[in-house]
Image 1 (cartoon, rainbow, N blue to C red):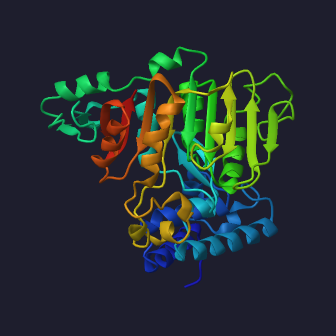
Image 2: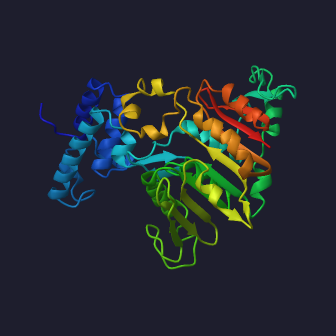
Image 3: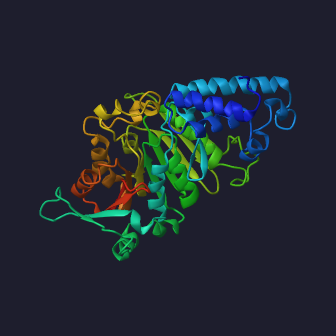
Length: 390
């Protein structure tokens, strides 16, 4: 049957994606249609029973633009049917109320990761506190996990732990509050915390130059804006005065890329670093720079499990950002051992974890000397974040 309305275009695309076993095919088909035809949700509802030609000139300027939109829509449906992530096709992903640019070079920001941002900002619900780990003084590698039972019936214990959970607010009142994000990827965690937590001094590191390029674009769009600065600029561009790019050469693994974004409200640095390696070269008055808070969403999926992931993840997202080596814990070991050198006394650490790592990661932190180790659940009920302090 010939396609006569936008609704029929949507139905056909939904069937194509459903045949390809795309999860939630209707949602994705609608997102692709609205993107290609430049429709807001309200405009789609207004025109869904009309022929695409009805969009001229109220939405699209002419027949040439309509033809290009139809070609783009069909191409994007084909891409999605091959299980390319929707966010990569659209080029953006929503995270903590912000739209982040994404490509194949970075992980697509996920709703589960918002739990880490909530933990730092103190925006937790009592039922999200899953367990507290106490380390016996005799054997610091052996931790005792105390479950918080049934908070819906007796919320007192979990409410107490929300209060006891390391509280960011003591730092937010300090104009010099500092943040280190290790394995920053798209920059979504560092940028969201800088924007909503009012960190004045943020360092975000990643080993991938391609990921850092995306993080830079996101930081420029979301942090350095016309409202933030007295310099003459536009919301999509940053003046030379606002960006300082510094490069230096290292023998291994190669040239170090560093981008510094600064205005009256933000001091945000992106640095190419294999975990903490490049930070060891940066000192203040001869000593390592220390931070109030360290956050990280490191690669944590065991190598053998990566091959079993959904095609959207396994085939299209960067393996370097997924693979935590054989047991999934390699980068947590580095974070636990090295963070103590880069945190100020009493400094906090917040790590995203896999759903089944709520005992092993706290054990690593306990062995490194961290205290009040708390496991925080996401809204799906899975262990998702470990928080602790020195």
